Image 1 (cartoon, rainbow, N blue to C red):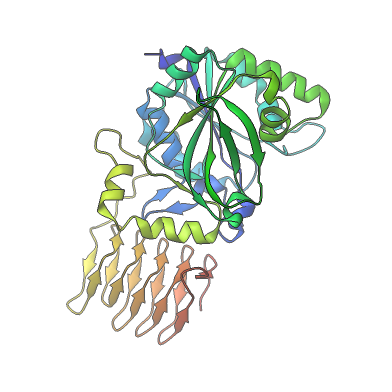
Image 2: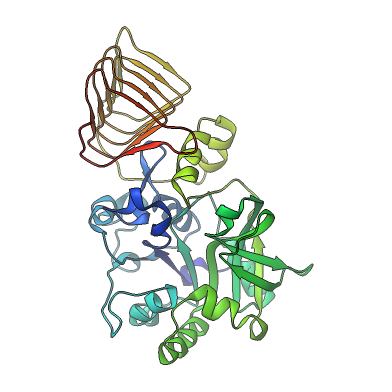
Length: 373
């Protein structure tokens, strides 16, 4: 087993934000709320901590105030410590201003990487929901002598979905021999989960070279263009995962959590997903309330009907209101006799009394943070 103390975890907080612009107008991708009480960053961060990685940097770009508020000093993940611990890495300026891609982001934090005592780096975005043990992946990387190890999942994807993904062709030895970035193809494919294991010295050399050539994309400039020169190995993750790459996948991934079997494969007792604790009272159910097949966080007050919904902390559903197939974020208030179907509300939304809002499963209605409708 690899000595995980020598691994530095790096989470990219702002990657792929253009795929869910409604949710990322006011926040980083990493702080998009999910599953009633979590933020997307909780998943890669908890996975790293559960894999004995105690030195983690979160690479930010913009809109990171809510991320700072959520993570704090890292206490919930046991990362508030004198050596190692959790580091928020804001965007250092260079001649290009804010970075354009992963390689350029790594160039901004070159000194942080150099100063760590790590031998290996795990790079992860914040858009994949899964429970992953990184230890066997690092072992695999070392055993195979790979330059880069890519974690991938297999599944059936539409053309629209592959346009946000990196699709891998893998031979019988698990080596990547071809790679398509955001192709327009459908069918069963191996897709990168945007998690990579690399040697620290290898990565620093790549970053220096990229800086001198004005290259910035990890996928295109490194993986794709230099594939024939590198040993790129693939590690299959064969447990459930959700990749948030559209409002459609965001909505459906939340809804899939109603399935207890699936939920139990993501929220494992022996490798929990940690999040910021908010000391709310338990949820209160009124005498006339009727709740079916829903995930309800603490601090809610429910006096109406709720079915197939994910309710975040502090949501209030007043008498006579009917809420179906909805995701209601923190402190949303649904007024008396309002009716909602296939709606996603951001935080602090007020739905007026007697109001009716309806979308569809593919196109849920989205209500911006703090709005009154």
